[in-house]
Structures are given as C-alpha cells and as structure tokens.
Length: 257
Image (cartoon, rainbow, N blue to C red; front, side):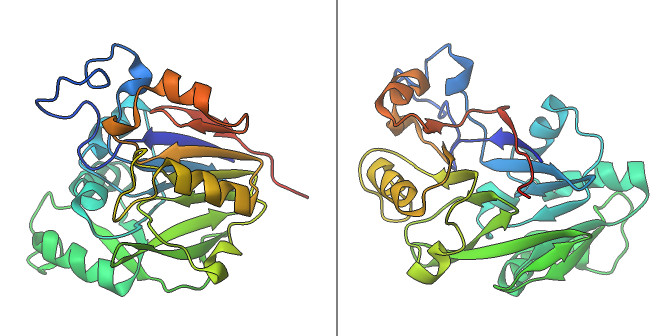
C-alpha cells in the first residue's frame, strides 16, 4: 500500500491569506499546506479521501492518471469543494466516478453540486455514482474499508481503516467503541490542529493522548494550522514515532500476514 498526503492543512490552508506570521512567511516547503486529503494506492486501485478546494492542484502535482473511488469524510466545504474536477477522470476513462459516503453527506453533495444531479444532462458536468455507506465495513472492489465514526464538535465524521492504515481528520471526540477500530495500526494519520484547545478539533495534547492509547507503530498529524508552529520546530518536540505530515509525503506499508 502506498499512501500519499495530498494536503495536510486546515480549512484555510497554510499560508493563510493576509497573514504575516512566521509560519505563513516560512520558505520551508513543509510549511506550505493545502487542504487535507490523502490518496491510497492498494490492490491495484487508487482511492482518494476528500476532494477539497485544492483537489485539481493536488492531482496535477502528483501526476495522478486514474482515481477509482473517492471516500468523503463529511460535508464541509474544505473537504468537498473540488468534486467538480473529477470530470477530468470521467473524460479520460469514460466512466462515472464512484463515490462512497453517508446519506447525509450525499444529500449535501446534491445540494452543493445541484447541476450534477439535476437530470438535465448538461455537457461537461462531472459524472458520479454515489454509493451510500453506514458505519459498517464496505468494499471498493476487492478492498475492504472499515468506517470509524467520530465527532467534529456536533458533526459526525467518518475516518477510515484500510488494512493496517487509519486516517482520521476533523475530530474532537472518539468513543471507546470506535477507538477499538484504530488500535495497533501500522500507520495512523490523525487530526491535530494547534497547541491550544479547540472546540471541534484535537489539539496537540489530545492527539498525543490518543496515539498513546491506540499504539500505532507510526503516527502523522494532519489538518495542521499555522498556529501549530513551524514543521521543523514541531518535529523536535514529538516522540520518535510521531511527526507532522507534510504535503506530498509518501509512505509504503507492507500488508500484514
């Protein structure tokens, strides 16, 4: 399995518009963060989690030629706004894009992208097929995916486990039952917004507490804001098996026997 961090930033990205803080002015490329998304290449297919406002830029940067399915975590704009650009894959492969999400998020997509679902068959619109999922394992072709339901303040959000990889973004609470699905992963990518407490995201201490509890071999932070500080400074503060992710980072995982 190959995991590529397409974006590791929070809803505004980093740098933030009109901000002149040290992080936003940093010339370190690891401090440049597009909106959060991840790409998983497994079982001969490519799966993307979330299509934020930077989806087009991320696909071009990574030279992605094919996406087989998109999983949506929730309906906030920084996670769905780029869905229109799946039409490039429609044109190339002459088939609908397979989308997997809850009914609630599917309904939000139908509102936000009403022209896609209007039935008018307008030329040039993205072609998508919504597969409705719930909090039970499902398959994308031969790949089993386990949803992990967490709370983003009052908004339910799905994280996902594929084999020994877990991805969770936009989280402020995880029940003990859902934590069982996270335990003993080879790689956990987890929301960690900033150092101060936040109403709808894990802060640094909360992310580290979860990591200690579920014991992944390696953990990476995502959905990072400029308030977290510079990448290299944060790296020096963290345990050996924990680091802030950065845009374009790739990780190879070997399937457990």
